[in-house]
Image (tube, rainbow, N blue to C red; front, side, top):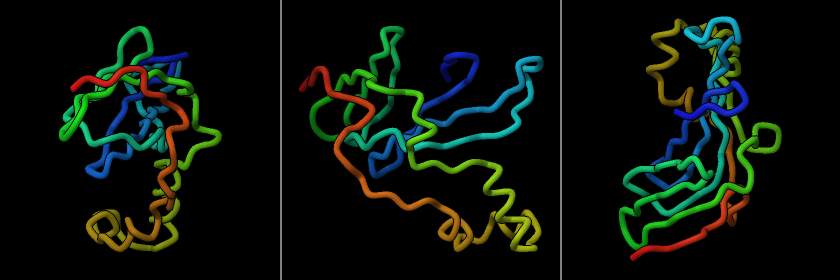
Length: 133
């Protein structure tokens, strides 16, 4: 979990290599309350065992298969341009469905219907600085 300009964020990687920036919306006067969550597609990288962000804005991804990678952030404030989904959009979709919360979240077809679609591209927000065998 990192903090930048008063916002807290973390990076998460799917089993397909898609890296998401997860941002927590917290009020400035009470940092113990989360008002919302936004997940944005950052980039697609080789699948890794973990991710480490340095204070120099470098991202190290030890690869599960192949070379480990060190990446430089070209952009991290991507919320306006990236493929994203918010917790508010999920709540709205659940309210429109008229389904109870437990039933809504336990039905996998709901996730399929609300998840944003995207096509992986070349790196946009990161660039590889170093590769380690």
